[in-house]
Structures are given as C-alpha cells and as structure tokens.
Amino acid sequence: MPIGNLADGRKIRTDRLGLCSGLPSPYLQEPDLLTPDPNDQAPSCAEMALAEIQSLMVNRIAATIAAQGTAVFVLQRQVLHLSTVFALDPPTARSSLITQTALRPYL
Image 1: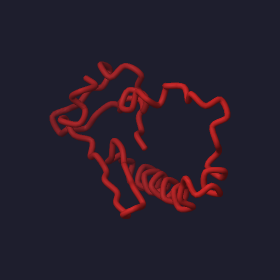
Image 2: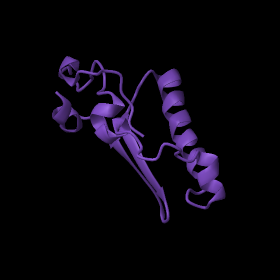
Image 3: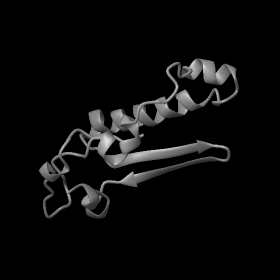
Image 4: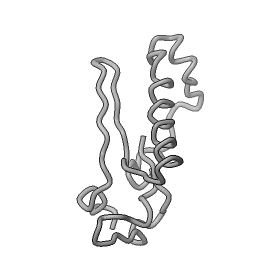
C-alpha cells in the first residue's frame, strides 16, 4: 500500500530536518501497478474471498492501515510512512518510514 503525490520524484525536496515536500506516486514505487491484468475478467475482492483466494480480512486490514494514516495526517499534520506491506499467513505488517534513504531511489 504505497502512498504518494508526485509523478516526478525529482520534484521532491527535503530540508535539513528530513521533512519532504512530497512523496513519489504509488506507480513510481510499484511500477507493476500500471501493468494491465492479463485476465480481462479479473475477479473482484468479493469473488476472490468467496473462492477462498483472498482472506476475508484483507480489505479490513488495508482499510485499517489507510484509516490510521489518515487519522495521523488529520490530527497531527504528519505523514510518517511511505508504504505498508502486510500478510495474513502469518499475520505480519511492515511499514517503510519516510527517510532520505527510502526516498533516494526516486530523487
């Protein structure tokens, strides 16, 4: 679940405190997001859950992660994580903090 708002990572500016002016768009972070699905009739999340291809909890966890990021942004005026990757079997989640090192590939 990457987040970002700039199509051109070279426009990202950081200051001496490490604060940045924007984040690379999700498709810069995960280029496969723009790769068309070879299946014309890709199943919906609900269809995958019914077929037991996708856990019933995937959408809930993704929504919870997005809601937490939104709450921090609204209440504290901060965006702390560049992306969060999660798995359900076993249950794990890992977030990438916004750092100079994390942004370097996009600058």
